[in-house]
Amino acid sequence: VGRATLFKGRGCNQCGNSGYRGRQAIYEVFDFSTTLKEMVLRGASALEIKRQAVQDGMRTLRDAALSRAAEGRTSLEEALAMTLEN
Image 1 (cartoon, rainbow, N blue to C red):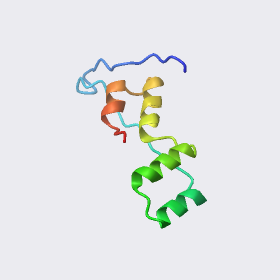
Image 2: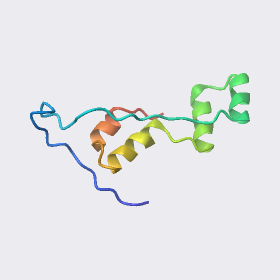
Image 3: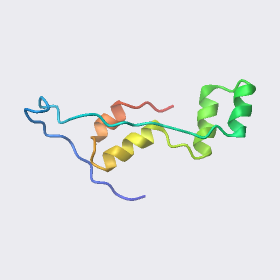
Image 4: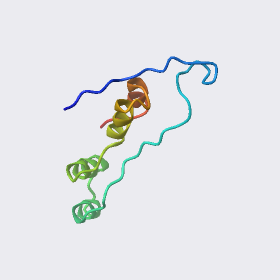
């Protein structure tokens, strides 16, 4: 695991002293594999489906937000506040 330098916005008149400007998209996308299709058809819970999708390589919303923080595009606090983990 590598190290990241995390940032926190200072704020200015242009951002209303919030430290943020604009928006950054974060998203999770997964391939709907045969395994996932079978799970849906047999009535698996959303949590079970998500766990399988992650096991199959899906990058979660939290992971995407933390990557943005590691890139210096948002703060760690914002990344954590805008995502939920199950």
